[in-house]
Amino acid sequence: MTDLAVDVGRCLLANPVMPASGTFSEALADAIDLDRLGALVAKTVMPEKRAGNALPRVAETPMGMLNSIGIPCKGPEAFVQHTIPAFKRYRPPFVASISAGTVRGFADLAAQVVAGGADVVEANISCPNLEADGHAFAVSPKATARVVQALRAATDAPLWAKLSPNAPNIAEVAMAAEAAGADAVVVANTILGMAIDVERRRTRLGAGMGGLSGPAIKPIVLRMTYQCVRAVRIPVIGCGGIATAADALEFLIAGARAVQVGTATFRHPTTMIRILDDLDAWCRERGIARITDVIGTLEPFETPQLEAAEDLAAE
Image 1 (tube, rainbow, N blue to C red):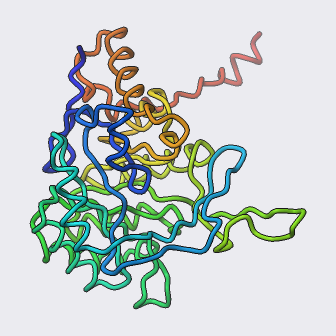
Image 2 (cartoon, one colour):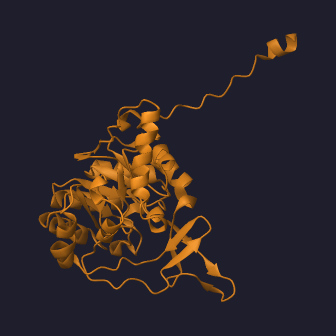
Image 3 (cartoon, rainbow, N blue to C red):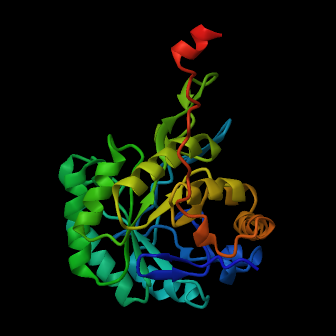
């Protein structure tokens, strides 16, 4: 059997496969063995109770899904009292995804969830920054640095920064997160999109626009992951359109240390387990003993050299 263990900064994971925040709950234990996953990532919690966005919140697209959920949550107290204990019954590290509209809100919430037992903090900095006219922290290297510095000062726990694919230059944002103290970056959140019902002439989401996820965004996020891998020394976790072991391998070969699976789980709840089994089979078929031997092995594309002009002329 292949050794699928990977290290993501200060975290040693049994394997590189974990859920993406917002696509996973303990109820999935009825379909899969949660102890087989590399880590458990809960739905994002915020400093206050939230009802979420107006309905409809989800719309299918030809190669993915648009969502505008609005991060509904019951608040940090319920998260600490109920969500964390529910997940801590399982072996994999528990990753608390947190978000807030202010730098102070992020810092306070991080301290609260770590005190409550979270093993890792994943900072969803792709949310609107109330201190910058609603622009997401993760579209700006400076704003990213400010929030990550505050988070680093608030907790010694492993800290992952979840970046936005809507940033003008995501590699620069990754470098800012690294310099400010992040242990890893997650690349990336959903891509801002929109769909319209042509008969009703209304948007298909109650909030108008939403985040696009699924197979349609994989080539874009794979490219961003590769760019971030080349730009930073901390681990990069790939997230976007991963539905098969081949998808996961693309990210790993590009240099990601681990991957997160989201939309595919909605279609097939056993997707993450199938990916793990298929990764093991792929490695064994090729005599690869450790998945780490695959990570970052992308070969440069060699363009065949044209024959010299004089050689062609001589023929």
